[in-house]
Length: 173
Length: 153
Image (cartoon, rainbow over all chains, first blue to last red; front, side, top):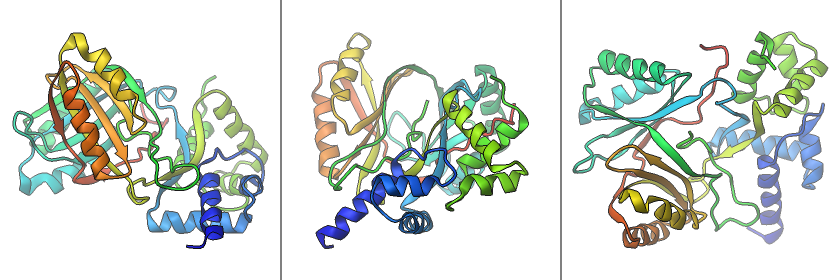
């Protein structure tokens, strides 16, 4: 890619990740700030979203302020043939905010990992019991967080310009 | 400040399906039956009050060439703060939590290569107080990018 294109893409990526101002034509304001055309920015955003390069475009909210004050990582042990079905069912629950399949390990045999956000600890416990019973998954553990040592936007080198900022909620507390 | 039903509807629509359109707040207003200016006032207030942290794109870092993983470590409790501090020096370590479990330290790594992840894992194993390191990379994503609905609960 010629340098000029590369540089333009960097500016489009930076604009995409900057905070959208609350004005009547906010994409024009962002485009002006990064010296790109508004139509180019909007078209690129739509294309990135369509291609999955952007997971989503929108507001990132404070779940604590919205009343989802409690959360826990809950891990589940599911047989290989049920991983897909149980993974999808867990993901369908509105209190389950993240759900991933990860490899089981000796001494830690769990293969489905979820983050559950609720208003209270009791609500979380009930939800876990309910999911366990309805999905028929007996073996699970709730890993309560004791301390947050770090929480930052993912950044990494290798891409010119401002690094892409990913999902802050990957293991969001 | 308390949220009324319109605020809650606005919050939900801002998180999922934000209009990529030159007049997004007018489109949101049309969908909710609220004038554009009122939508903007509400959004500004929700930002000012901290309900909305930011409005922006969330990139899939792996699609951008990055590699990520989750790591669980068993650390001697009286060394956990030092271990966490040493790990947090690295910008590639993005989240780091103490959890009440045999594996008491859980952190995510997002790096630009697998080799860099291996290097960080090796360094972790070498830290004083680290007894065990378990890597559990993502095999499949069933759900990510949670949307919080303030109307629930």
